[in-house]
Image 1: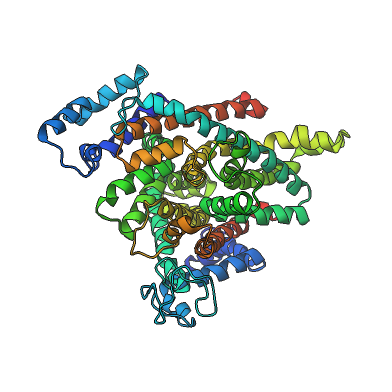
Image 2 (image 1 turned 120 degrees about the horizontal axis):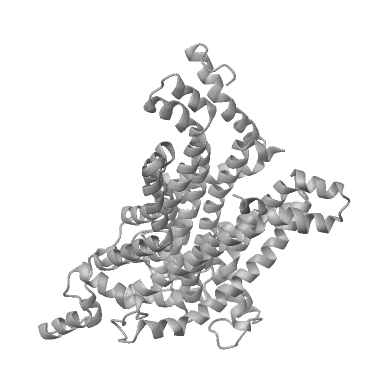
Length: 297
Length: 309
């Protein structure tokens, strides 16, 4: 894990700094800066040092909890992060909750009535949900629910809990479809397993057979999916926070990239890398907890 | 496949034909497959020959022939759909139907091209890892993990923004998406090659002294083809969606290129007044992505006999 983190940090660092584009020009905007100012800026952000020195200095700051300073707003990156993170975290948690509750229930219903009406409905609607780009879903729901019918707030987070519903629903839409399909396939497969037949033969009621025995194994692919889902959530956050005008991490990263605010990009991205690795670790641990067969290996 | 080394010509056809023949038999009965195939054929035709689709429209046949005012002085921009302009007109008064038809090319070129780039890298790295195992596999797998950990869309926006200083071409967008997509391709190739190399027939081939080159070309590649092909179809669909998203965010293709994502990018400012600007390109992206996903699904089911119970 630690080598992957250092490797990924080097990769991100190189992507941001080694590619063409001058951060000093990004700070100066359209004006031509006097040579002395350029030198001062370069010295302040260590831009005049070789890349290796910059990387080592950045990493040693990072390990001491200093995320650097924004070139554009001159504010500590850490403050920018603590401002935006709670909004995105609430949005993402809400979205994952929707995904799991609706997705798993839809998957179970479809699997238990295989080839029935509900199954077809779930298959068709999930395929369509995966195919529609998230911004089309976003604008459509915003237009219908927010503007035309006025049921939920159109944008921003000013209305408390209510204002999270629409963006979270949009953010959850694609992954929800995947969760439903994975649950369905997993459950269909495990309903054919010997241990399920044994449970049925013992005379256990249907809900115990499904809930205790079959479902336990069929949620394993769903758990694995949550790691991939993290990537979707981040990508989705950039789009959804843009559409619904939410001051979150996705919006901040997108703005930082367009302004060449290098340290903001690197620090935010590395935090995403760390969260991704933690999610993977938790999922691995959950696997062994859910599937007793893995415990004895 | 029961008689491995009979007459050189006959058995190879029969042996290789049986799996794909079974798959084809399953596919022919699948309405999903036909739906996907028809939409895909239309989308491909639209990408290669948009003139064909535009020629039946009563409006101008040139997507760049735009005018804000008609001869009688009335404004021509953002007209709703009508008999003259089937899909309405856009912000510059261009016929939206013509633009949507011409928009197919960029999406499909990027989708297919980026998937090919990802597959090429994935086949090389994943193939080496899965076939030789040992230290090359360990090194390649760690590098794959490392690229996996960097968020895909952030990487794409970053690279495209940097390139974008002097304008982006379709080829550049294609390369960036392809280069970022290889880790998944590599993992899929690796696991399917790994699965094949552990089969008895590969061991048998090795025991009778077949060379690596022969084993790879005659056994490993044909037998790991199905999952890789299914992945490619789904990947093309997903990448068309990614291209649209990136163009929507303003870091994908750039004007004067015509692409569905770019149209939606322009549409977002007018979405409340002129929803047709969002509706038509959105619908076409969705249908195209849907066709590739459905085809991938149908192929996966057809190639995997376990699911046909």
